[in-house]
Image 1 (spheres, helix red, strand yellow):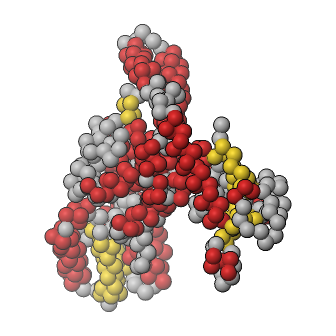
Image 2: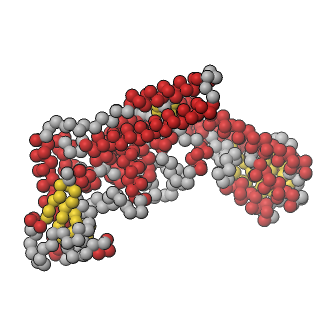
Image 3: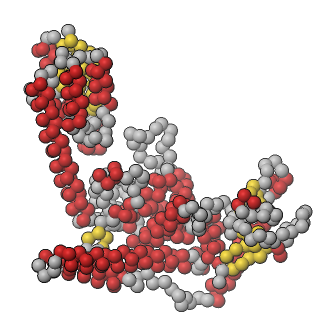
Length: 508
């Protein structure tokens, strides 16, 4: 009796999301394949199935997907553990030409191996059978390519209509994926509105954990590692979905990217305007864009060689804002050694550090400095708000809206003239590219204006009413709007804290 393997496979079935009944349906298909293969085994008479290989719910048309049992089958045949394979149909064993070539290679090296299909008449032990097997895989590869092209085109058209794409329930929406979840959506909205004021993705991540959010379990999730990642929290905030806008990323584009995609770059634009989706928005586009621009600015600053304008310390109020009165270098927080009296009483100090380019000659206990600066800031700000109620420099982020609308109309007009034959292809491209360049510049400037307006509203009576509830990063952002630096002048060793040696330099 020739020892052979039995290979079974059912393609990935998206109906599995409907529940256990669909899963039982797939299981029945796999069992039916086994019954048909066992019947052929009995009819052949000279083979015995000694190993069962089953890639259940696994696609064979995706070169990025590794079929574990298919790889094991090849390895066992190459090692001589089994001398062939029985399968239902060629498309169950291989749908890609590459996989078919790997199978054929094994049978060309071992002409005595048995390779038979229940359906389709494939016999891999013959040249004709291997040729038929390769031809069927070639046709399958072509069919896969055509299907992917049709699906990509269809999905793009659906996206341009603003129709919602399928998928699991996103955080912030109810099970229908259209109406807002009352608590989750407010968590996202609060974060979006607070980000221009210093609120950080790390703060949102912490709020998600406190709320009890747990990310979905995937095939790659390891036991005990279902925690909220920074990238997951960031993706929730930058997704155009929260602004009610449609975006579309082709599958091929996702696989080309080696890092997480920046979703705002994949907005669906029709006639120069972003397409609105058919679901409720968490925030308006004008509320969402400043938050996205601020997150991107912070990421860019983080990768900047000099770290310009990138605040990595958010634990203490004046860290990096304070400056040494001797050398004017920034002073950073430095905790006292645990167990000492200074640690128990003060916890930390601000210090001019030589390893950060300073002289190392000035340090001061931290909490009194923070209390002094915070009190002075709040008093000065509230006083100025009381004296200057009206604002003459109110930012208007809609200043370019009229021109952006006319640009979309001009592009449509150029396209119509080209279709009518009144304008050459070259001339129309020149005109459209010039208009698109202007549109990009105006859109970018509009985003900056929206961010400036959000920043301008940080120092208002309403904005400071909940000062004690703000995160440290939000407090520091507001502080930087009014205070340029906090200069800490030298004091003699052993002297008590002297407020007169703390000089606040106000922004002009």
